[in-house]
Length: 350
Image (cartoon, rainbow, N blue to C red; front, top):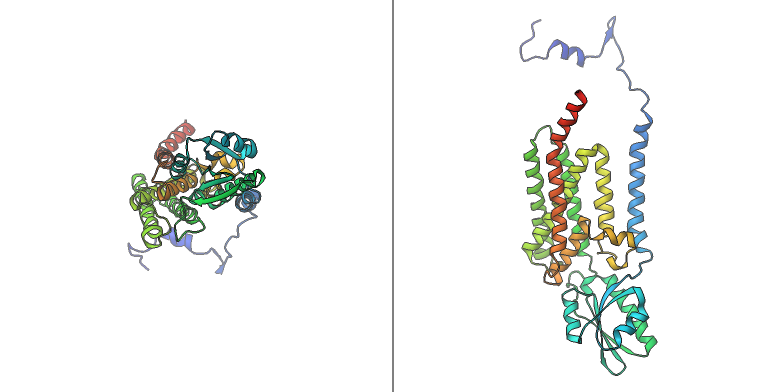
């Protein structure tokens, strides 16, 4: 029988056909016993991820303690009295008058302001938008001080949360969702190296990250009215967050192989979101969590979202720079990876 040019080659047919002996079909070879590493690696990674997730999200919330919450205080004697009574729980900022204290709260220079509004009467101005947990902690501390000093306390929320975000969690959910979308984008891009050139993969990561930011900003802003930030800056912020997550995922996956994705999960989706300060205020976190809170992409994004939504972008520069540095650094390292791989192969060959 003749085999046409379009037919499979004899070698291919032989490879695809099970071996026979005397007309009998031989069973396909069975894989041997898997090595110990094949059992341990996925099991240990899964255990580490679940332990880290629970430790971060549950452990950080079980006993929040106030640490140097910035509070503006007016009057000649009141700053010293508050500092002595509340200790390290607050960081006292003396200001000349109640109006200056109120402006400091509205600019998010401080979380709350305490002033004397009459004989035996204290006024507490808080920014509820700075976080429910932080505002509640400050209120409790000042109430305890006022009760001990025999003062009446009047509290006013001068920067309240949006109507459709009464629990103050919209920023957290947006940051988590965008981080997750960036992670999925980066992990899927890892498998495209065989069919897509490096520059095209970089364009894919950057362009889709921007699209993620646009979709997320439109949904949470004009559609759901949960985040009252200007739409264009919010799009840029969320696009940078998606890019930071996507490029970091691809970078770690490229350099570390299969272990890179679990490390990204721990770094950004677990530690980054748990310490972002949206669920538990950054000033209530343990020292180690506070130190990384603003340095990881989700924490920087939550600060930017809050600042744009309620404080007129007064402190947007720091979070924006943090997000841009994560995205740009990871993109640069992705671009260098093929060159480093070729150099390593040359050295090994030599």
